[in-house]
Each structure stands twice: as C-alpha cells, then as structure tokens.
Length: 227
Image 1 (cartoon, rainbow, N blue to C red):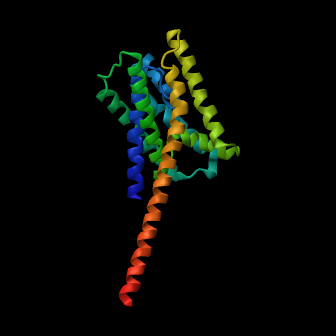
Image 2: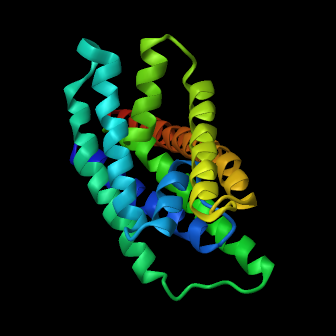
Image 3: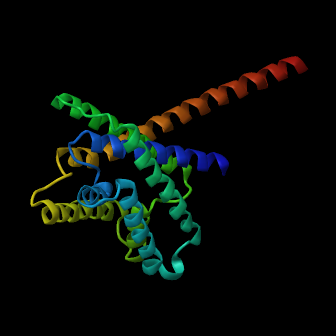
C-alpha cells in the first residue's frame, strides 16, 4: 500500500510539472487545467488555487451522481488534489524564469510537458489508489448512466476547453490560454500513456521470462546436487 501511494504521489508530481511546462510553453494549456488557468489570468488567484476550487466542485458532484454507489475511500481525492495543486503553484514559482523565445523552443517545452503528463498519468494508473476529481467525475457519469468512459472523457475535456474559451472571451474579448498546445496535449498525453504502459508490460514479460529461466536453472542444479 505504501508503495502504491508512493507511485501515485510521483504521478502527481510529474502531472503537475507537465501542466506547468505546457503553460510555460505559451502554446495553450491542458484541457483539464484550461478553466483554472484562464481564471488565474483574469483574477488575483493562482492556477493551483483555482484548480483546487474547481476540483473540489467536481468532487462534490460525484456522491450526488452516484449516491449509495459512491465509494467513500474516494474522499482521499481531496487531500491528493491539495497536494497536486500545491505542486502546480510550486513548479510555477520554480519555473518563473522560463520564457521560451523561438517557436521551436515553445514546441520543445510543450513536448517535455506532454511527456511529464504521460508519465504522471501512467504512475497514477499503476498506483491504483484513487482518481483525481476530473477523472472521478467522468467515472461517476459513465458508471451512473452506463456510458463509455473514454467517450465521456473526450466530451468532458473539450467541454472544459469550450468553457475556458467562453470565460476568456468574457474577460479579455479574445481567446487566451487555448492554442495549438491544447490540442497537442489532449492527444499526445493519451498516446504517451499507452506507449509507457506497453513498455512496462514488455518489461514485466521479459522480467518474468528471466525469473522463470533462473528458476529452471536452479531447479536443475538442485537435482544435480541430489544425484
């Protein structure tokens, strides 16, 4: 259990770092953080603070939708979200100096951010502890209405982008925080998670094969010693 929570916390660290790097690329932000980021541009609060408020609202909706099917272990989403949002603000402070100039530098920072996001999501899946409120709300909707999680996740993410776009138009009269990087991160993160999970599966299969061969060799040696 300790190992699983450790892996999950590593995932939170990488995921928060990925979100910050995508923001610092100035090519947009990830769909899940698009609303908090736009609000942070308009109002005197940080991305992490808005993320926590927004995530708390998504958590509150889960027991309302699921009712008696809600698993109360998922209340751990709240402290995990607090840590996640604190990491976001911490990395925003650490990388305050990062201001890419040339377009290839923007792309480079964006891709590093997407890789970090992919590692973060992969670690969360491997940890198998709790979901963050965004995924938790999608899971609640899919479970209650018996819908496909993947399809609901796509609709949910792009709904957040649409809301962020509306807020941006309201506050600034133009689109801020949503650019090509938002599209890239939305598709790249899923592909990277699939890639990392396949790599881990191959490693486990290879490791299992090595252990099996080692076991056979030790068994043969023991038989030889008995003879």
